[in-house]
Image (cartoon, rainbow, N blue to C red; front, side, top):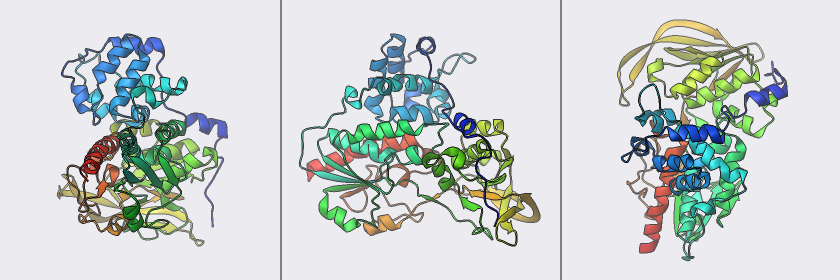
Length: 454
């Protein structure tokens, strides 16, 4: 059986190519950029931010050389401001809404946010400078299931309210998507771990390597805690597709491929010489970038719709093109071709025609009988994350048909003690770190109110 390859490029080159994409702005660069801001009183950029950061306010503080004040202003609304400065789709949110004269803007809001929040890490400061300190003890306790962005933001808010908080996470480290699912080009691991450690420092108890429903039951959590917040993400596996031979050697989950970049020496991550990625979302873009920079000869993303319908961010798509990634649109994989030993040789695909729009507004793919083959020795499936309803069902929650629990606009479920937020319930473009942070922050307020009434 033909193995995948390691060491296609020197380790130092791979490390350099996977390091953070943009350098931090210098003091002079940040001052110049901040000085161009119009400081709108009804700032559309602030309205476009899911966490409602006072963007004009923190930029003005940078312009007056108050970098710490700017960081404090950011963290007041978004305790994971350092991560969001790097991974948030600013081009489609706050910067898209910027009204600076065309040709002069937008203001580089994300990079200014990074300039401000990086000060805390550089100077050894903590989130306490922004008012994150434990509140007066209430004697009430909350279990947070999932230590990703939503769970961490909720834990921070609940500790400020004085409640005891215990985070349960199946991984050895906290951070969720920010730690394990985002490539270093977008966010170094140390940033996500620093933020997680800041929240742990609020007196949050953490039980890592513990999976609820496996190592501890849902019933135990309901017995031991006054409330439970479920922030388990969109799922750790991709949706299965009707693909013959998907169990062949060389076919794998793109999420697991990305995770290995975080937990292994990057140059030692196995990769094919001819990689095909199924999908055109952000996971597909990240996997394609990794494969290209590890040294694959060809990297091809195949998608059953057109570029217009892809769910990946346009800027990530542009980065992939610069890395030499090819995109094949209106293509439906139907069969993995293998050699006599079961290793991948290629991906047989069918040409797709697009029909009428479906429930999500995108045109429905219609598979034709026109077939062709793309050579490949490594196939990565990035077909969307699959929620695992067993965790929610173990709490006896009423479920939606798509595997999400039914929730109110206050994050409450059919069990008054159980709340859900983040990617566990978000869909589409809202599947993002910044939206998850907003959900965790606001869910903490709702849980605090519930505990105060009971």
